[in-house]
Image (cartoon, rainbow, N blue to C red):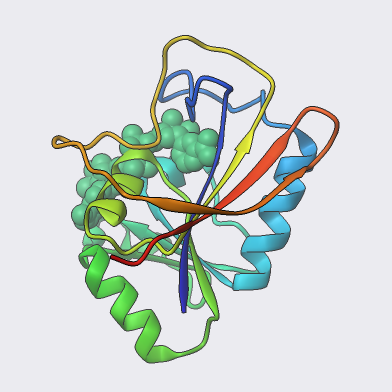
Length: 174
Ligand SMILES: NC(=O)c1ccc[n+]([C@@H]2O[C@H](COP(=O)([O-])OP(=O)(O)OC[C@H]3O[C@@H](n4cnc5c(N)ncnc54)[C@H](OP(=O)(O)O)[C@@H]3O)[C@@H](O)[C@H]2O)c1
């Protein structure tokens, strides 16, 4: 099972202007691409704040929401669609691997989640859509306390429309 971190960024690498950013700068082509790929995979892992910013579980995919207080949200859980967990990143991945239901799983953010999965070297691929907009400030996809050097190999470059570039990188195995 492949673990893929996926995000859409501005040309200066920001994934949001702030925590309340409605991401209205994201193209419909990228939204379509995200929907198709995550639906094909069938499972996404996200932080509680990203779930809150989306505002609802995304249909036809298992939404795994990481929170330190899963009991607080247990009433919202929907079998097969929305679950809240305080399992570690490693535990979630080993559980999904053991279940053997998915060829890939998408880690969809936000910053704290991408950071922990990368820190633990759980990410196999990073897919980045770059939208033609500059912010100069905002939220970075990764915010690690200690810098890492993780070499990657460019697998694929394409455009989703005349302005949006999609980059797919494979993380080199150490
Ligand atoms: N452009 C993009 O592609 C993209 C994608 C995703 C998100 N975003 C943006 O990113 C921002 C959110 O990022 P963020 O870093 O602030 O928040 P986040 O990663 O979405 O969520 C953080 C929350 O996740 C839970 N969490 C984190 N690590 C955990 C762990 N090890 N165990 C259990 N729970 C854990 C905690 O929830 P509790 O507080 O409940 O314990 C924490 O407060 C938003 O602005 C969103 O729009 C952008």
